[in-house]
Image 1 (cartoon, rainbow, N blue to C red):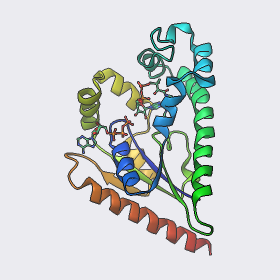
Image 2: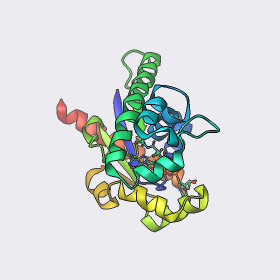
Image 3: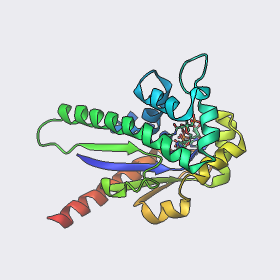
Image 4: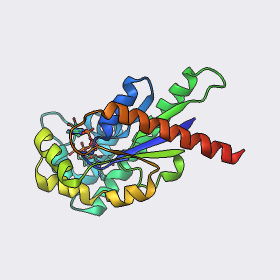
Length: 212
Ligand SMILES: CC(C)(COP(=O)(O)OP(=O)(O)OC[C@H]1O[C@@H](n2cnc3c(N)ncnc32)[C@H](O)[C@@H]1O)[C@@H](O)C(=O)NCCC(=O)NCCS
Ligand SMILES: Nc1ncnc2c1ncn2[C@@H]1O[C@H](COP(=O)(O)OP(=O)(O)OP(=O)(O)O)[C@@H](O)[C@H]1O
């Protein structure tokens, strides 16, 4: 199985790129979506989070996590964030393993299976070495803030808190292999996403040949 990592900061447009690739038939695993599922449905992960942070973080209507309250805490307190990541990521990676096994079992013998992880924290978690190539979506911070405030109804402070918990675009540029510049309107994003994926596949081929 060959893994490509797709990363980028909050509001950069990485899930939009992931969806473009998925629509074209590529296997894309959305780690943000899987993380949300851990706390948005009854189960072990939810109960572990409530045990760590307290019943006051349970939404009385849904019985699941109060995301806004937990966001307020963890994006202002690195120790709480590290604890939450420890809880959520254990369940998340177990699910990623199940999905990859299912993809591998459906592939024809001897074919090369390409799996893309849409992984917001790939660089923060220092997972670089698990990927044959890394694609980063980069968009100026002010545009990212504007998108999330406008389209998700979040406050500027919320977005800035998340940005502080993530690596800078400068670091993304230093550590990723391929870049998709998503500033401005999303014109021709499909074509640019295709070109970036082709470039990542070429890099993988070169790296595999170098091992021969
Ligand atoms: C704190 C939580 C409850 C806040 O939920 P909320 O609905 O407000 O945000 P959502 O999950 O949609 O994420 C918003 C943005 O924050 C980013 N983000 C989420 N968790 C983190 C984190 N631990 N560090 C840095 N950025 C993060 C996401 O990639 C996204 O860009 C939630 O983000 C969470 O459970 N985070 C821990 C799990 C995690 O690490 N997820 C990232 C995917 S691996
Ligand atoms: N070039 C663009 N111009 C304007 N809006 C865009 C552009 N690209 C994506 N968007 C919109 O910006 C928002 C954020 O995009 P998306 O969800 O793909 O980002 P993300 O990097 O996955 O963010 P997060 O990590 O916060 O989930 C979405 O509402 C999306 O439709």
